[in-house]
Image 1 (tube, one colour):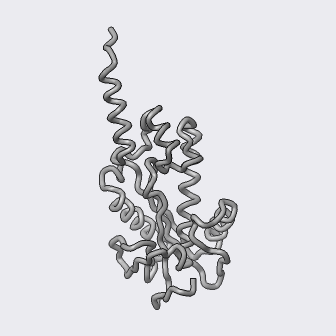
Image 2: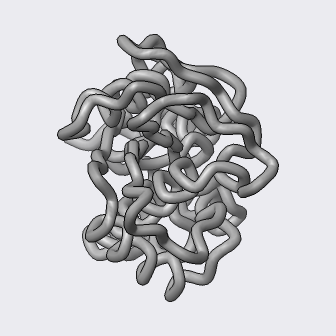
Image 3: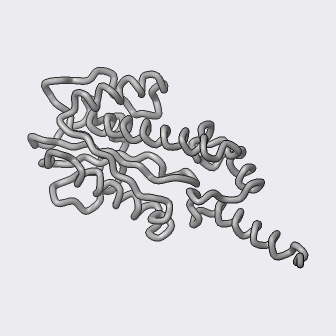
Length: 208
């Protein structure tokens, strides 16, 4: 984390998202303001941590952070706005939900949503900035748990396994079973599965 030069601000929030690529579920964002008096060891990009380590850090971040908040955009919002604008909206919601107002916001990636305070995009921020790493962990654990819950509701799709990403298994199940109400209908594999289902239904002989 030493390579990044922090802005001179008192309360710095880190923001990250999880779930831009999946075909199902919300895009989940988190905003975290860490407490300098209670450092957390081992913060890193959530994707590079084991699930066990992520879960332990998830609890530690919630316990030690000065403030943390979740934001989200649901599949219908993603379909309406597109994934980029829905992600920006979810990030705004995460920052707005913080119990403390940050002086400065550091956002993972190459662009920031419009915010009422100064902000800076940090490419690979989840590996460079502790606050963004913490946000990535909070967002990923939250979304993974939502996928596990969706797996219980729709066990035939394997959501706990692929987390909604467009793997070969997910595409196969989408073709077999069609889309759930939680799928993003604007994403091509889902849209194509819906078209195929409509074509198949139209080709079936009418029954009296």
